[in-house]
Amino acid sequence: MPNNFEKFHCLKVIDCKQGAVRAVRYNVDGAYCLTCGSDKKIKLWNHKTGLLLKTYGGHADEVTDVAGSCDSSNILSSSLDKSIIYWDVSAGRPIRRLRGHAGGVKCVCFNEDSSIAISGGRDNAVFCWDIRTRRLEPVQMMREAKDCISSVVSNDHMIIASSLDGCIRYYDIRAGEMIFDKVNVPIIYMKMTGDEQCLLAACQDSTVRLLDSESGNLLSEYKGHKAEDYHIECGIMANDTHILSGSSEGDAIIWDLLEGKVLQKLQISKTGGVVHSLDTHPKLNEVLFARRRDVYVFSTETSEMV
Image 1 (cartoon, rainbow, N blue to C red):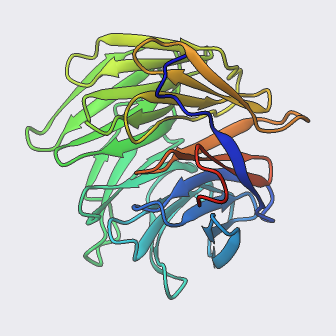
Image 2: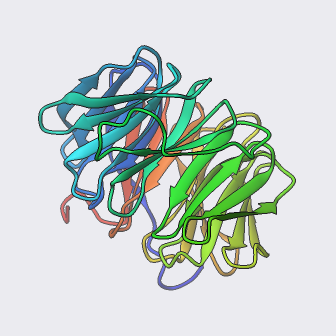
């Protein structure tokens, strides 16, 4: 085991009391976290203390994903009710409700300055919405995917979408062109490394793949967890050295990015249950995991240090 690897342990378990937790996400600086529930609500937490700060209700079906803006004053949520809601965080009310997808919306993200909302849905489409204006139609629609969009990420010049059709599509905003990489296995979830050089793709064959963003070449594969037919997310620590994934067996795996070795197997629950959603802290050695109705805070720090 590498000398610089500190083991993670559980600091806190939060019972979110919102049915099944569909996704857990940090805000931009990692001070708070957001959870999406099968009870159609979003909750804002201080995950260090387990204190519920606010509840956002407005969707008509399960909430599937949520993203915080770059100044933490707004959030964006997606739902199986086919809508996206743009929220005022402090007031706790919707500013805008965006409709256009023909099926449930699976994933959302903001662009770099949080002026554009990006959504991906079961209708195989990626939509871009200008949320600074009152315009209710998407400013751009990308319909190249042949199956459900599983995740979307963006940087200053690119929108990247993964799909269950086994492709990752790169939409170059400046050049106005699309290129794609074929993985040939349904892609459940995708994350970009901090340096934006690589993409991490969680695939349905219980393998997490590391791909070069520029060439699309496969750099590494990580195995040891079980995905089966579940939507199980992957993540990468802020220092870009460790890869993580949930598992359908009630645990989570941490690998060394370069060597591909399993560094630690975290037992989230002794009673099983799918550990499906996770998010890594933007700066610290801290991870959030979601399983059933609970969120687990894992860290290399001790609770006394926190």
